[in-house]
Length: 74
Image 1 (cartoon, rainbow, N blue to C red):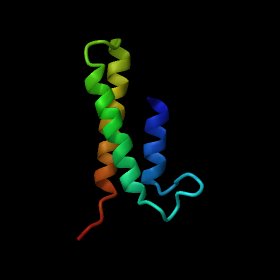
Image 2 (cartoon, helix red, strand yellow):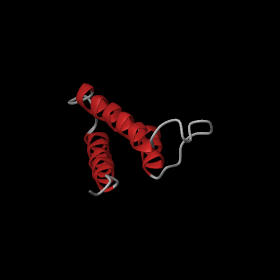
Image 3 (cartoon, rainbow, N blue to C red):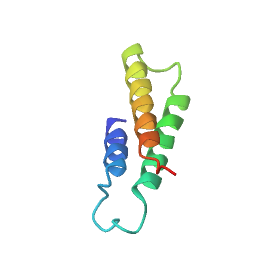
Image 4 (cartoon, one colour):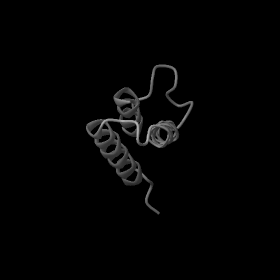
């Protein structure tokens, strides 16, 4: 879970894996990873330890907030 979160944060900062630069927008990659984490949160609801659930919720909230902050302004 933390690996996906780290990859999403890196994508929001424009740090894509070698070969992916220019091929896709980092925000698209980040959105996919954030959606994946959201799906994991839904699928594991009620089956995580309280500290695991809190970590997942806080991580998702932080990533979603960062995603909104990186939206282009019109």
